[in-house]
Image (cartoon, rainbow, N blue to C red; front, side, top):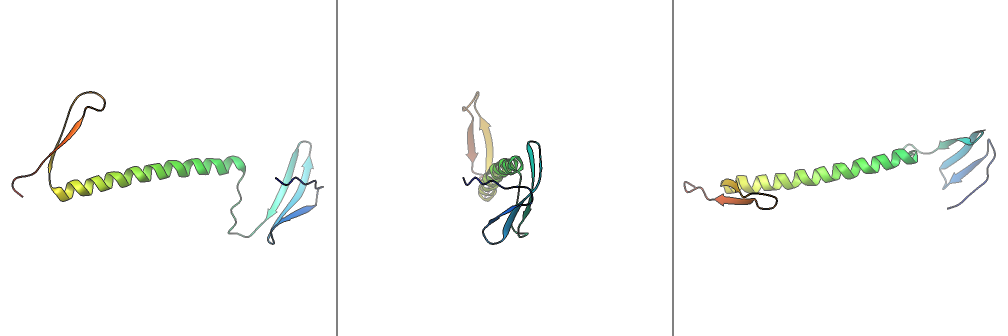
Length: 102
């Protein structure tokens, strides 16, 4: 991590097109201004981590939906009759009986 000392009104550049300026110093708070191209996303740290967490949740839901959709297609294609039997955790069994009319 690069650590710099800047006074109010002073700036630093990141690359050729991102300028960070110390706008105001008030007690223990510092206001900064960031001038960057529109395609550069800028987030406060806590917001950035919230976005990452939401993206993880969305990806997990997408994987589940994809798995359900795949299973649905297999069952639809097979045209089978399905029954679930068993008791307790992990004891359920999926029985697939071929429809004799097909």
